[in-house]
Image (cartoon, rainbow, N blue to C red; front, side, top):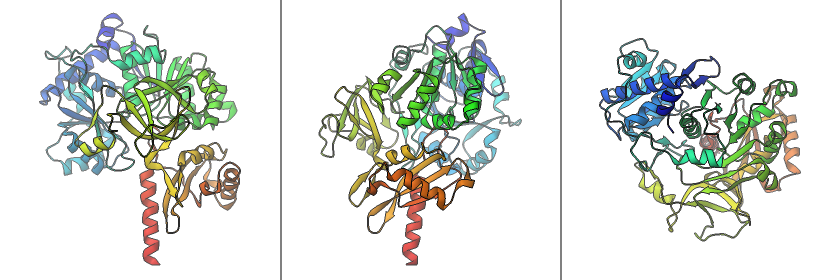
Length: 515
């Protein structure tokens, strides 16, 4: 199935609804707009395989661009709206993007990019000038291009441990625009998404991220309606479920945490009876948080573990999870191997680096060393996560390999500490990192975003230390606790720990210089 088919059979069915404004795009309108985008790309000299980039906030035009690229055979490069101009410029050069599509929301950023990259072609949504994207699209035909072929997306890693790297996907199995894709089968048979076109799917996260982009596209292939939140707000998400009679949705653990922090009367105010499937991923979910969500929403919560690389996937429903708390499920795509430092597979119950064995593996664009570093000698590939399998084949994630703290020769996984901190009623978010320490190598540092900055101070610090002391070994307890009104977290749930590590490393270096 494909939106092209739905435009013929269900032309008036809403394909996109913007949750806040109510703006609606039907399948017929989406098809015509996508055709114009494809013609526009050709008019700028983009051939199948050529790259272009998109830097936009969540809006309905985003999907029109996605589906236009998909039929132009081009490589769409979504760019995180959180990145700085130098980081964006790096991605534009690395991907060899020949065109940037953006909006007036990023006018200042685009101005800096133009100064640094004067030869880059740019079209801006809402500029009103010669580079106005809407004006350029209006001059293009709304019919299918003559040389239509399936396109791809190249997502860049979040750059949490260095420069972001493009994940160049393998070519599609078929160049035909309307050819089926594997994720559609996983969505219907694995996640239970209905293929009858009646699904109403809420997407609360930014569209440049892998999961919202991929799963929303699958909803369009299945003929459903994607309800897009312009920006996630917990109460607004509940209101959108009620208003649009949402049947399916996708979240990250930070969404759940913020939803659970709402007052009880707000949580119970909205009718969620239409809601049948709530999918979540992107990071390990603290066990108490997920238990509370299942108690609230019922056994409709489905979790998966995967990555932008597309090398494998696990999945677990609520009933399985209640029997295996903390697990992300069994593999439904790819074979899992948990490996020790010597490269040998570990028995059930032991933590190690997680690899997936698969016939089709991607490569990191322009970085053969990063690709080689992710590979096992037996041809398996890792996303860099640590975890363990139980005797029944259920996978549990421990943490990212790159996040591990080594203090006094002991391996400490920050995720365990963070999971406890966010369950404290006065904590909204938490990041735990390793900071340089002259005696221990690294010391455990907790950076806390409280629910109310007015609560911060020695009393809250003491309360949190007491809270952790009864649940963690002494070596895992934070040596330092700091409070911030915001953590460097992506809207997609990814935490930019690199920024915090760099900050504390610089502070340690400055202290050493003074000493």
